[in-house]
Image 1 (cartoon, helix red, strand yellow):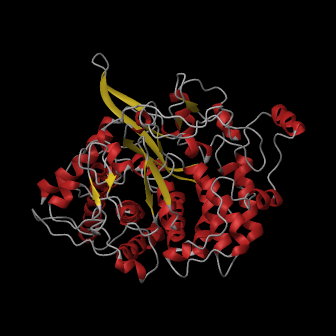
Image 2: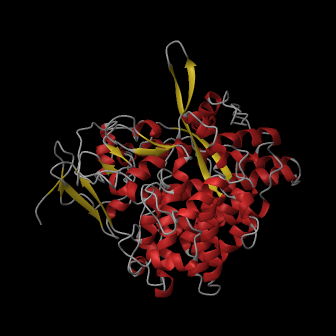
Length: 574
């Protein structure tokens, strides 16, 4: 058993050890196999977070990314050219496969499904080993629990729950309801330390996975505290635990619990929000991407509830290559006018470290919130390890979750409260100096967001992210009802969430849980791939090496009418 444990844990420990020079990281990795003291358990949990970044895989699978080689509208709305296309190479072949909704067969490298799968299960193995060790320590101490051990046990349960939550949302269909989700294949929910060479795992179903997550989540919430760490932002602290609970219950549509856990972090109402939400004024003195990244990813920012250091090159993949945030995807997030501003760049776009690729052609757009932090192991040779710090939970995203819950709660529907939250979100991204803001307001280019503006702008289906109705959610589940009177507000939330979470990967989760249908236009001439609400390709295929080991496919029917060619996808006639 011990060699297996060491192998499983060393993968996580190695990344943290390599990252130890980063001032952001407050982690003390422990490489010992015998975890027999309270201190060792706490140190072990520092390696209990996945070093793999699911952001790139999910963004490339969403509607936030386009194929620059397929004809598309240019980014500049004033352009006299109606469409453009380029001849750019992908960063690697895997990108062609993911964008075309194909199983990834060409890569097990950074940002691949293999690394996401492996990183999550390594974290789960660490959590299980910590839980086993805690039980042994408590038994040795005659059943006595210390506060530190209770907090460590809670953290381990939350680690186990959250990494299964990532896995089920990446590699499975979206949660529908307790009955319908029994028909969708899940992921193995691992709760014990592995001690066999070739274990057999049953994927179960999505409903069972969510039930298991709920059990671990609620048990972890009961005892979580911040006592074990001097810098708790790198761990499941109290606020991060409530934020995870709010996200989980939003996905299961337990809206009253979403509000309860969001209020635990944000406070009731909007009075405390100016202290909690993203502050953009820190960008005023920034010049380089590292400067912007320091502001985005700061553990001292109240907005950042939990940070995770990952190995990723997604910062490199999005600029100057074939697949980027550009065209209509860009116009649907940053580069457009809105309900209360009259520029082509959304207000905070000026100062938040979002820049076009240098050159005459706009090959893509990205935010410095995913800027790479490169750690040199040999500066002379120029080699080392690229890191991207994930802001795994933020107060700003939590606010939008609360607004959605207020709209859709059957028992506590609170449209005025939701509107207040949406206005508070918009106020937080007005980033101008007082003089500039006054000047823009005098010109009519910027006005405060109001409920009437929300209703007028977000009732117009010609505007980005707006639907005439949200009846499509009922295809996911007959009890997922968005009443007609809240459709404009839901359009507003859909718009704001897409802006807020771009490059994080959460847009892919939203597309799945709402059942929004979307397409990818591939190549020139374009081949259009559309994902209907029930398309099996909404579940990213598990890694090929996992399939080869005997685990069931995520999408057994997805490729029945598809063949591969040099363009990576050609559909047969139907």
